[in-house]
Image (cartoon, rainbow, N blue to C red; front, side):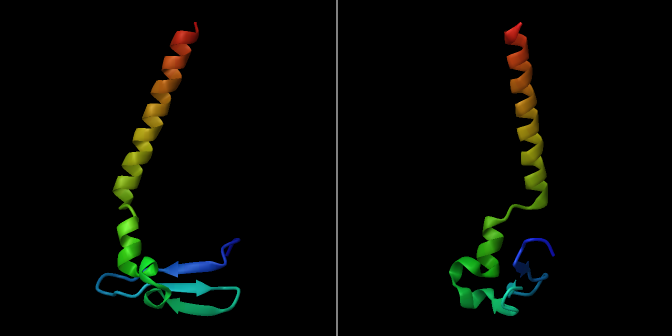
Length: 76
């Protein structure tokens, strides 16, 4: 465990509960009891599927490479 003091345990398929483990206080919290923003459904809505994340990363890298080429071309 690095500097993280809270781990998140996401539910597997068919399970609803997300758990937050506070390593400092040695406590475990059910996301539903922490409020609407911390429920499994709410967290899933804010997370991207890995395919989407990788696609966005690839597109960002391509755009940056094109910008650098454009700058190099115009600097000569």
